[in-house]
Image (cartoon, rainbow, N blue to C red):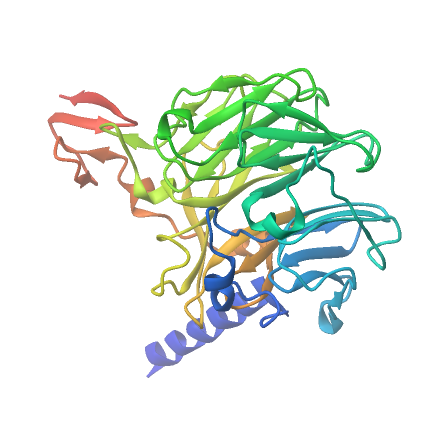
Length: 399
């Protein structure tokens, strides 16, 4: 009886601890990607965005518009929808009262916190309104020091940029990037990627002159056409991480070249390869968090929120937090501020995860981390004896 009471107490403690770690912020119906999948799926996957702004504000770009909430009091969180659009939000940037929104139908520029906005079109950037669906505009990157200068990425072999908040535009041809990001350390450097066919041109690209010219950093990032995020190290301008539905790679030279991580006998290892987002912890740059997919997030058999963590700069990973999800949803996007990890799920709304609370209890270690050795048939070996094995993609001999 004593043993059973102890067991029940431990189970109750575990449930309470889990609840203390994870806080639901709601916005379930408004942020639901699963219900909108037939409407939003086209040449590119729709991946929502979520970001912390300032001390306490959290913004979410959803299939139903742009929302914000104050998280200073988690017992009274209320989401506010910005009135500028009801359309699907492809991407957005918030710089004080200046908000740049890329929706499925239009580019919207606001200078009053999203209360009103101006539409910005140009013949040198966009096709006519009737053919908007063919524009394939998928990303906006705002210059860190000046919100009037920003790039728009197209999946049509060119970029467009403006220096005057969308009044005039200039094309940069020859890239076809689907996402690009300004380096927080060097504002003349942009790093981007192209996830599209042909696979021979998919991969990471870098510009060191403000986006005017681009260099193809092919290396080990081209094994799959789907790439989802590039993350910059908080203090070291040379270190970056890239994740996708296949590749997971690190750069140690500012994005000029990439090293594939977690490869066994030339194959991406499943335990870390299918990341849809990756982010550095600003408090400890050797710590990264990854949002892991089990497969294509538009399939019907997904029902888990899974966060993995690295504490050695992204070289090795452990399962960190796993939570069953209702409505067959999973994790799509993250952002971090201090100890709080904001989590955007495909069908269950927005959550905050206290990473310090998780770490203080016990991280869940993946089988891959426990069994870094593989036999020559690719099977994990927990306690290798004499023989030849594969470790970190290389043959090793244990005598």
